Length: 238
Ligand SMILES: [Zn+2]
Ligand SMILES: [Zn+2]
Image (tube, rainbow, N blue to C red):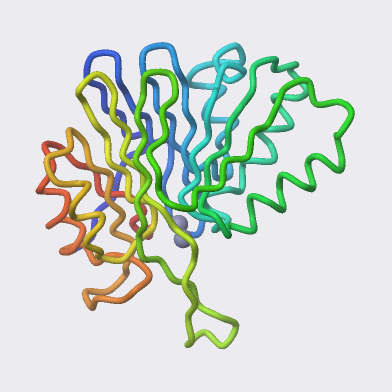
């Protein structure tokens, strides 16, 4: 079973909405959540600035208050440098918090490199928020529940794998909620959080029908998606 999504995927319920600009494994992810007047960016992969610019424009990009990173793979963080630099060039004033799995070295490294290059000329504050115990986060009337997921990557030999620090997030606002699993194999935490959510965004990135610890098969993703009121299957190889 294959599935071709036409991006962007959009969902809205009252003043709570999500735009998935892109979600293609190994290429790019880019997601924007809007809760009333608050803007959150989720997994700012390559192309995020282009897509945000087209969708919400400079003024609103500068008001983005939070970034949520599921894990450090390039297709989920590749646009972060661009976004931070654009905010610097355009004189962002308000702070931005970056939430990410503790031990996600990519975010620490991008942040440290950014500070090293621009230390004296960053007009806004960057607050790094590594997530260790999956405590709930509150910001701009939105409650965010991070939860652990299971995601692995291949080592150089192409056979052995290692675990990647990876999270999913459940965003709740005004009695509505969106569950985004990020990249994950079938896991009980995602099953739990996706169930009965208003929208579940589930990756179906596995290219075969056999279960593994890297991505979900289409059948696994469907079974979780169907437990939510509405769902999108994303991150399907093209
Ligand atoms: Zn990915
Ligand atoms: Zn990944």
